[in-house]
Amino acid sequence: MGNSKGEIYLFNTLTRRKELFVPIEKGKVRMYCCGPTVYWYAHIGNFRTYIFEDVLRRVLEFNGFEVRHVMNITDVGHLTSDADTGEDKMEVGAQRERKTVWEIADFYTRKFFEEAERLNILKPTIVCRATDHIADMIEYIRRLEGKGYTYVIDDGVYFDTSKLKDYGKLTGMDFERLNESLKAGARVEFNPNKKHLTDFCLWRFSPKDRKRQMEWNSPWGVGFPGWHIECTVMGMKYLGEHFDIHCGGIDHISIHHTNEIAQAEALTGKPLANYWIHGAFLVFGKSIKMAKSAGEIITVQTLVDEGFDPLAFRYLCLTAHYRSELVFTWESLQSAQNALFTLREHVRSLAENLEKKDDKSPKFGEYYERFLEAINDDLNMPKALALTWTLVREEKALTDHEKYELLMEFDKVFALDLARSMQREEKLPPEVEELIRKREEARKTKDWATADKIREQLRAMGIIIEDTPQGVRWRRVKS
RNA sequence: GCCGGGGUGGCCGAGCGGUUCAGGCGGCUGCCUGCAGAGCAGCUAUACGUGGGUUCAACUCCCACCCCCGGCUCCA
Image (cartoon, rainbow, N blue to C red):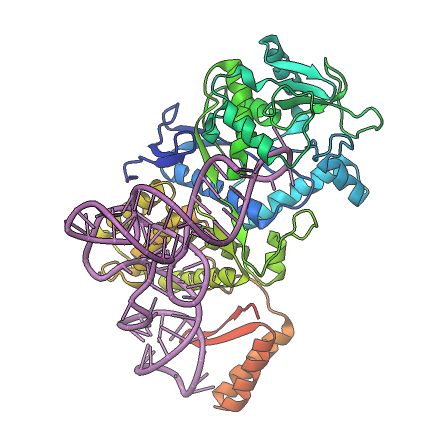
């Protein structure tokens, strides 16, 4: 499965099988990815999913597709469990930081894209905020109402899931089973006036006793949109009623995406997306507790604070298949970073020896094909990485220039900045420069004791010194 | 309870009927180096949760069991 003829195979949650990807429009892909709720920092678990989506996009583009990639920003509230208190994550965040919900949304949206950029995640073609599309959502709910899919109870307008013959098809369970399982597993209080447990809110009324910061007028009363409507409405607005790919984390399968499908298909009678693709979770090793609710989360900034290159995390994500859980530990991150740095070292040394070549050896095309075959087989990045190591360490038939060129091609998908030199353009502090100079002098006079002493000193400062035929080189190390 | 995914050598992880059982990290030896580091050459552990079954052949399929993780209207 998967080959070099631009045939991409992807695992579709709808059919639970790898399928040949066939775009609706030749040469183009319309893709929607569920974005963040911007009430708090995104953690590295969130980012594993965004990295997976970025890889998907890059693989599509590598194959020559033009990708229209849409991502929403959820900036209006998802209720917490208790309907009586009616808390909203955005409003809770605002109280915590004594800011308005709008300030909170702007701040964390900005942070999100800053951190995404550090992971080399391409910015979506279109980023759309829920609060900019309230009118569209109201209009959409009216149309659903016109078709008889809604009913109004005390706290909002609901979607009647029993009216769809195949509600829940994404989960592999039918309507009855879903309702039973919800009942058995309920951790949250349901509004007893709901007709079915699977029914969900389209428009929620503001609480009567409190003033919300975010609320709008609607034909049904003052309130705010429900939890799933934004993605359906914005997806359709920017990609059409029927698009190619919809993706997100596996946690979205049973509720969010199931309800998106319900809302969409109820109205249009056609599939919202052809391929539903879901990324597995990043899980944490025993040594790491990430209490989401307690605010103890690991962010990209945390990794940097611990001395890691953010792309070491990207490398770690690439070592596992996107549909497998990946265990995060500091040790596994360290080993990923070691591997990444070594790879960059190889690239650097290959680049030092870029002899002129005229013809490409047949092996060149072979590697290119094998790479394409791996990534086109449901994004088999572990396989692509293994191929990369074989190329770098074992291949003798290719020139350094050819290897370099291949690695640069691969990096269009990996996005690991393989060509980044360890040294970069970073300026060292003057005292460090001075120490390096002194050590060089000591080495010239073969005063090894002094030279080694200074090397130890620098090491303690986090600088590793390497003597090479080309002169002294330094790099930072996580101590 | 229900749904889903797993248990692979010191660690992270591919593979999923039959070539030497990916790859990385770590560790070890040699070359190189003033010594290191990096790199190179080579090695490493005789791996596949347990018990059965199917098969000429199972880590890979089937059954049972044990254990782990995720989801079940906040969550990527």
